[in-house]
Image (cartoon, rainbow, N blue to C red; front, top):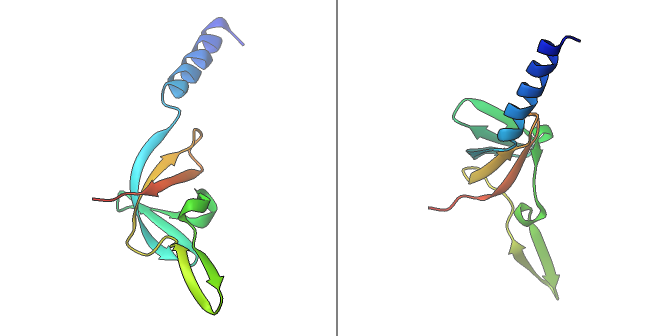
Length: 98
């Protein structure tokens, strides 16, 4: 590898390191299977999404009554996403509230 090629490689790595995460907003378009639409053009299927436990449904049965402790994502929810460096996976950080 020539010196010029090595300098180009280092430069590209520096540029990528300068933007390790891209934050964006999306809308839940489907729940089962989960799908999020980003910028009205990019549909992210469940395989590309990392969903934290705080955004999953949690119900608790006490006696004969079932209580919803935490609701999961629903169609129409606005979410905040972070694209992981490399661009394949997206972490859903939270719901966006107006």
